[in-house]
Image (cartoon, rainbow over all chains, first blue to last red; front, top):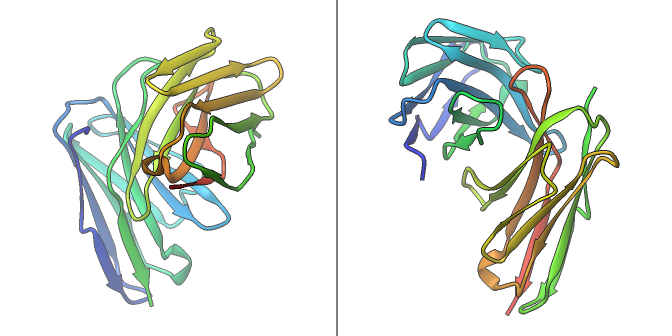
Length: 113
Length: 112
């Protein structure tokens, strides 16, 4: 298994609070990604990073920000959590190159009440 | 906009059967297509990646094919086992950017 650790694994919080999810990798891969998985919508990309301090938006980036200050860590922040952001969040990593597979972490289940 | 569809949404088969899972996509301008397996409450496990220039890839009892021009891929599972029970997802990578677009998945149950 790819060395990807997501923390926390589960979190319950209230509407309006900020939330930060962490993804840590031990593979030294250049690319890191944040996805959310929802029934009826499947997996959708939120943001991704192609290097330290280099990030770009995905399909559903509104209400989310990311930061990558070290190769191994990619943080996802919900600036003011809303109930629509209740979801399962997955981090993925991949090496450089257009034909490298993405490998996924075990996910964070986030509930916003 | 790329759309990826997986049919059927669910499939139940007896142990030992050979089976085919289908994946279709609307835009043939892809870099590659990746098949994943997801167990309940778990992350995704990468099974196979087919590059746009390839026709098929094999790993053990799994064989994935790609027909880019028709926008279709199939995942063939030989001699299915109860341990193969999971949701299978396909995802395509577009030419531009690193985004994977996922299908909705096929939930497979293999009965002993």
